Length: 169
Image 1 (cartoon, rainbow, N blue to C red):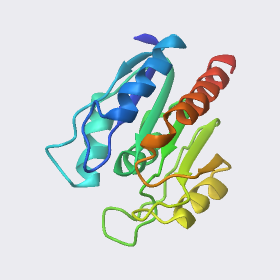
Image 2: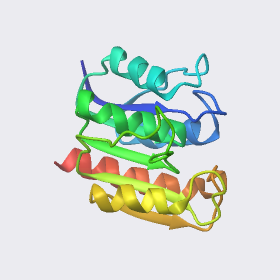
Image 3: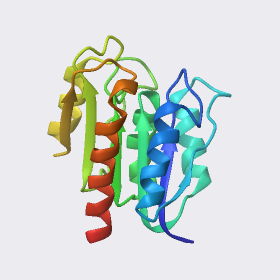
């Protein structure tokens, strides 16, 4: 079992080592976390992706789940089963009124952080606000779009802060 582990979950249209994950993996490693990023591209079904993450059974003294878009939904929904010590979500695709996408995440850890772009045309900002308010998560709204790729430095700072808080707890 790892002492510290970050598990990334990529979005619907990306892959396990996209721009954000590759950048943020370095942040996690600098803080002493091992990193894994499963490949979910074989399915577009969020429930199958959640089942894949839970079946992976990542274990660590300090487990942090990180997800982007659909991966944000997957990470949030896996919290009840995996009981992470931290959660970092970027433009999470939560609260869509479609079967398989409409679950209420449970077991959300403290600390949790949600980052969303003002100009996100895929996931409405109100959904990120609802999640943050419901789960008392920190919410950061940036001058960006859904991908948040133009905000890598800020994402780095915010993830680093969350990991520092996890290590201190």
